[in-house]
Length: 199
Image 1 (tube, helix red, strand yellow):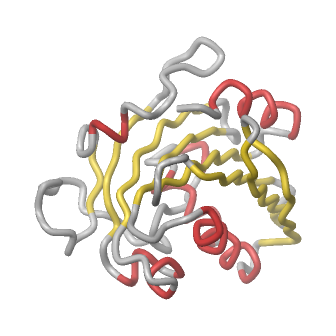
Image 2 (image 1 turned 90 degrees about the vertical axis):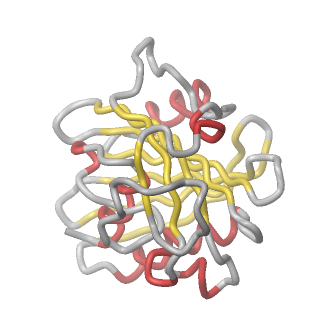
Image 3 (image 1 turned 180 degrees about the vertical axis):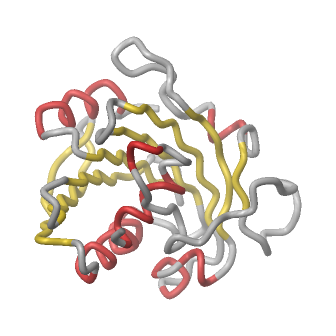
């Protein structure tokens, strides 16, 4: 299982269809229960951890509620990966995930952290994509989302499956929005961006 897939499952917040990609950590399991009000020294993720972030997420996609909605934080250098090296000391995140079939899934996530921006978030995902043994090819494309500049990372895995990650600024300082799609296809990714781009 590639690092890019490992990165998508914790960010994707436990969607089986996304197999495994991990938000803010290369496959390390986050603490399931923690005190969100405590100092950011330990990683954690659970439903309702940061309701203000969860409230920014879309509530439906194609008329369906997400299969999971939860939120958490990444605080340790090991979990933050390239973000720590870029000077980001901690990140809070929330995600809504839809299972769209045995091999397809969709997640919209919001990240917040002092010093966080879309370029740093792109590097967080692009580095494992470029080095994973299961990656056949990848490319980064300039695009727009709801009129905002965005980056789209397309990953083709050696088994023929694809991962699409679209990253753009959330407007507020230190906030970044991410759409993660597993084996969804370009047309459906574009439709998903139209429906879900403005939490």
